[in-house]
Amino acid sequence: MGNFSNKNPKNSIWGSVCSDREWDFGNDSRFGNDSNFDPHSKFNHKKPCKVCKSHDVSACKCNFKAPERELAAPLNSDCVLVNSVVGSKTVQKVAEATFPFTAFAPVIPAGSTIVSVAVVPNLSGVVRNTTIIRDKVVNIGFIPVNITVTFLAPGATIPATAVLATNLPFQAHTDFPGACPEDSVIEPPLVVEGIFAQPGVSFVTGTGAVTTDAILVKIVLRTSITVTRQVIVDSHGGICDVNDRRCESTTTPTTNTLPST
Image (tube, rainbow, N blue to C red):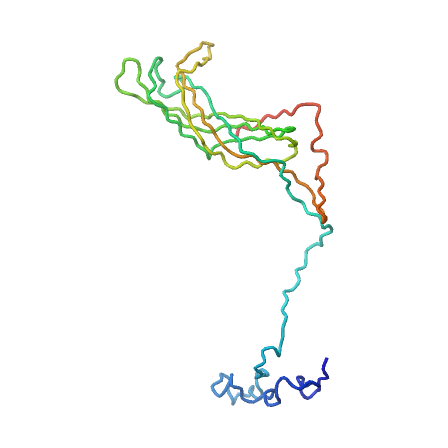
């Protein structure tokens, strides 16, 4: 370091960056006579700041650093917890049910000719319950629908309509080799791929009688299923399971009663 004198802090054995004239407290071109500083003010006995007129922009080199962030509690491990993907695949689900003519309002007369069936699904009201068993993902749920049937009653010449608001149940089990009960499942919203209606399907009534005065309604749905598992990764890339016994087989099968909403 240079040998700085008391007379001028900027004077050293290498000379001065600024001349004595430039370091005095006289007029400066940046403040000049038009300065906002009153020359007659009692506070103006010296210049508000020292001014160096050096044109050497490298005379002062400043390295600014943001203050270090202090953690509330220091980390005691260089390991991280991540989700490992066991598997991911696109799947289809089929929601369907058969409804007798008597389920509609007004009741469709027996022997009527079905002209058309309009099915409007309510995707925002879908209920899904998902469970993982060893190597499989089981999905059970239902989708709300509004069904409007246009029909010709026996002997009638003018079509009439009947409606039904109900739920179409669906269920699916998807093979996922390596999946275990304590894994997690990610499923995006269902997408409707097709809507189908088939009149004349046999239906067993509550009294045990079989009738063909019924309509089968089917909706094909598409989604994807991704199974993930929490694992610990160390600084060398080593991986270990959070629960190393998650895939141990049980002696009794999984039995779940799923919620209705």
